[in-house]
Length: 182
Image 1 (tube, rainbow, N blue to C red):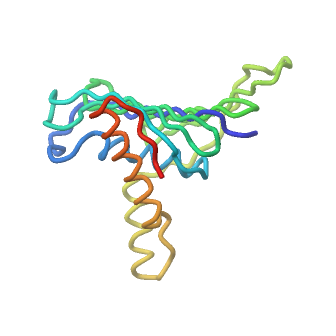
Image 2 (spheres, rainbow, N blue to C red; image 1 turned 180 degrees about the vertical axis):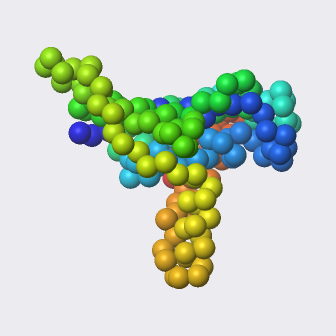
């Protein structure tokens, strides 16, 4: 069925390597990209709250609300403040809920909870997910594009669209106002 809501959490401790960018443009960027890809839709407006100056001079925590042109709503939480690392995504559809936990790329999980009113409502179906190290996959795709002329899985337009959403989240947090994207 149609996707109604997407919720992503990317939380964890501060990585000392990250000193020149906000959590929005480092961690949340990935989940914005995933949401846009899953929905096949563009973000029309955002609202965000952040916490700044705790680990870096930039935003160290963001909670965002995204409205898509499909009518779906996205909820986003990312930070460098949580002592326990979390990476999960929940996709609420008309017919149920998918929940992915990929904090350990060697053993990711994907479960489906149907929402029908029959006896199977609430029953969990586990879906097999191939384990792969994300950076290896990303670099392999780049090498294949350069060496073999394979298409890039993420286009420059995809990257620019995600960057516009990240920038809008930062603006919303800075101004305290909802931001509409073109």
